[in-house]
Image (cartoon, rainbow, N blue to C red; front, side, top):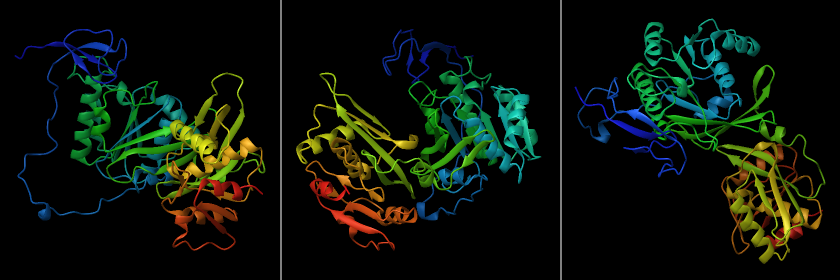
Length: 450
């Protein structure tokens, strides 16, 4: 019999040490090392039987069959629907609505095939009460309150469900590993066995994952490498809107997002996020600008707000919510140096309304417009949208998919668009839309104010 060794594993990053340490030398977190034993895990070790190498040209490729989840926004984020045998990890803050989202999805899926919802944190009665509130009607939806992986796999073998939900992976444990549930070894081994089951039996499996205080999914980083898709459910607790964002997807794009609205009866899909985010936009107020951002293949019009005021302290405040803070600092420097707006001693706050986060450089020009509008206390014409990338010398650079952005703005009633001059090529202006191309940030000041 092999000798069982004892070691200490960091519960944040998975670093292993032969002795206990107060601070993890890998992730610099305190008091995260826990004692574990190196007992070989029981379970299969390979995804399939050994095979021989094949030439790339000899391998047949077929398009993956997709199954609709019954929620168009979830299908969009997944890349068009569920792929048989896929393993999907859904993370998010506590109370954000992960369980609600998956219960609504599995209720729709259970109308066509058997589905098993494993709850390891709640009783079946609690899940039943939530299902009644959501109006679940599927007869082939089964609930199981269990934390033992061996028992879960046994029930899956007996029931043979078409879909499986594990809520959550951090509370599942296996007897093959002698450590507490939620530890690095337990999460890694449980996820590995569930992956083998999903691939071997072709069962699409959803795993709910807890997140740490930094917003990352708790457990070893290898957990995100093992699964096929990683989805983050985001949103401000004070706002009813929720955004489902893919950060990894082996079967589709990672740029797509799904938008939901949390209501008493559950999550409602938002098919037109632009109208939702602009519903409460104040018109003719300084510092407010509308920007057509692109999330995957979907253009979304959002309101970008800026507030510039005199500083009461020696060091001015700089706050950015929804855009990159360093990018904002760069744009402030461009305004100060190239456009000669004196912003060095001003407190500056930038916010994207609705809790949306914009990461693409196409929002640079709108950010500059909002900052200038607030600083000069002059409102931007309310029927104008602005987008474009700004270089360090103040030049305005072209961005991707300009025509898609312009068409979305025209559909919502906007009549004027300020964009990079280089993006005017091959754009057919929609009826009633005036396109204004600019080459430098100085030209923006002449165009944005009514």
